[in-house]
Image (cartoon, rainbow, N blue to C red):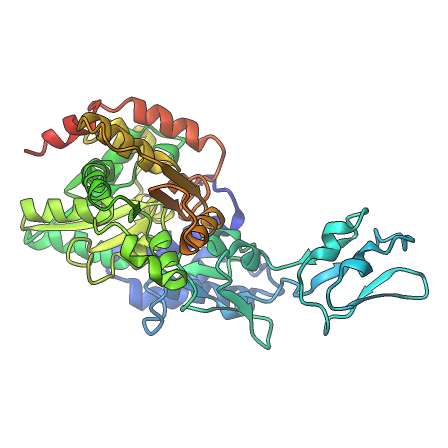
Length: 474
């Protein structure tokens, strides 16, 4: 069994693997109800009160693994019956309170919500409390804690709240699809829809009638994922699943770096369009800044467009760490170029559903991009690429003033300043995931080693400049 960061990822993997296996066999829908028993054949619950609830939740996971609720366009959805274990307390006073004389917590409270009981310990009136956190900040004993749910803490756009049954609900009008809540939920109650059965269907049909070829385009962050095998073996495994060819999305990044640089020179100020969650953040929270978003497609979409223009039989599937890409590929501006999206978690399940032993495979090359295309995988990478493009195009009369925003909170700070006409730079690179794409919620691994592995992969690029990379397309 492969190693995952959490038990939640492992359970998700087991569901995806079984769904994929049944789908390849053509027996998915007749055996769908038996999948929970195949995953957990014992009568012992994995983490719940009883095996019956366990299987009911697994049934919901299966539904999401085959596409989820089609009436809900958001790819991030809540499994209601799995969301019932987290406390909903807000700010609370713990046993660490010493009943001190200073009463700093009471003094800073703007609503008079803090009083003291007969033991002189602080008490918070929930009806008055506005959860500003000022009391927690001044307590010398750190005795006041915010019992906020992990999903709520993870969501930096305040899209998650609780209903009357204490079940998480997602406001689709606020959600930017970043997927941070998916990885942070300790019970796996928030899950991203999967489209792997559509991908399997494409692969099967391409083998049966030869009417089209299915291309896999892989994000450069793949270099930090499959620690037990070489990248070349992973490429071979993807081909063994049934994909016609494997191409680096970094090649699309090289193309975009060149185009984005030209657009920046024309406009004088630009916000990047590579991260779909960052783009959604602007559209939903700073509509006046939409005009500044680069008009270029993301590297994923641009590469898909290039492949389809050069092969009329092509179907294109993106593989990466990003859940937001599952929303992006369904946009009107993108759907003609990308046919589906899956995460690295789903790729692992797909490989294992075919009983492919990656470690025993021969290596296949993946050499389609430059260092600067591959470095898009981490925060600041696009900025490096734009700087390099300016250099290669011998632009001397333009001063690049970049702001690389690492994570939603940094993106919000930068966008807020811009919305208030505070000059902070002329090129805003926004990455919703901390660390960049290597921090994506659909990753197998979320460890600190990722950045080092990506840098090593970038340096190994055969093409040393952006122009070298793009020239191979002519």
